[in-house]
Length: 184
Image 1: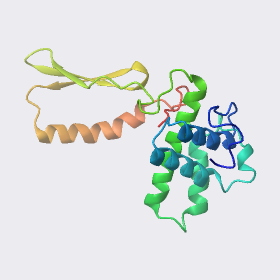
Image 2 (image 1 turned 90 degrees about the horizontal axis):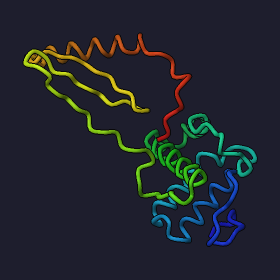
Image 3 (image 1 turned 135 degrees about the vertical axis):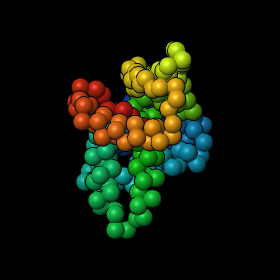
Image 4 (image 1 turned 180 degrees about the vertical axis):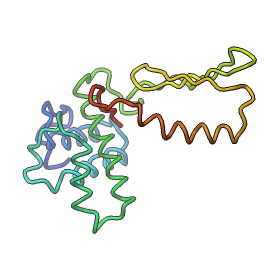
């Protein structure tokens, strides 16, 4: 058990500091909530991403912007770690922090093996007439985008449509200020 974990292995930490985050993963490992490799990877990523901050153990992680923490880690470590390694730490840290916060939100429903977010329904394409196909694309927060394409669409047509969509959609999209940040 880590020296950061001052509670017994049978009780998870009640707080949401960075020290509690590490103690949580100690608890999860000690009680078999996660596989040894998984829990160790989560804990290591948390230590690496946050460990360079002054007084990091007392940092409150409930309101932490994981991307800001990752950016600071990347800036501090970009000269001594490979870009791919930084990416792995970042991804693992996001998952570890998200699971920790999910546990605090609802410990009775928490399961580290389940997807953190409900799966989106499969993307559906239905032909509504001989003349066109209606494609419904499922977006986050229960929203959909629809696209009507001719039934005789060619590969060249599809490539041209994709070029246009890549150019036009960002121009008409509203800023993401109103919607919550997706957690990964």
